[in-house]
Image (cartoon, rainbow, N blue to C red; front, side, top):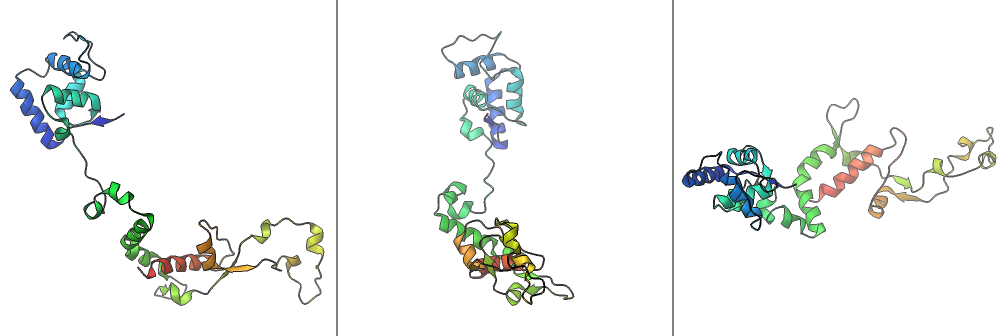
Length: 231
């Protein structure tokens, strides 16, 4: 339900208009006239009831301006005081850094998506670089640039532990005395490896899994670093 309240400038106009009318705040004629503004075809009396949303407490809250009231009541009271409600209502400023540059949030959201992405990247560039361009390593006092650490990784598109198999498949090549004994065959990778950076370009969503120390964090930080490096 939409609610409105008066701005500081609007309150000044409201109080001036009420004083010019001369009636007291408790006068029921305020509510009668406001009811007529909402429903002119109905007969309203000072004894009440009044139009939906109108009451003496609502009228008092309108005059005080400390809390919002229903939009229909706000507009009706403004009509009674012969005020333009759009000049009275409190309009909070848009909290957007782009308001002065591209005409506010609405204009910003109507821009092409590529332009929006580039604009946001430029605004976030320094913060992203601060967070993801360096890593703290053990026994090294100063953080190290990610570009000096990163080693190109290859990624399997399918997780080997999630692939179905039978026990006989695991035991087929099992020979603990052989030199090439390889974890019951689990280490034999039969999938084609793809570059980690190519995987990021090819998929909109990724789940990066790996053992501790395998390079997951370094890979992701390097990817972010590359995205923002040329902005």
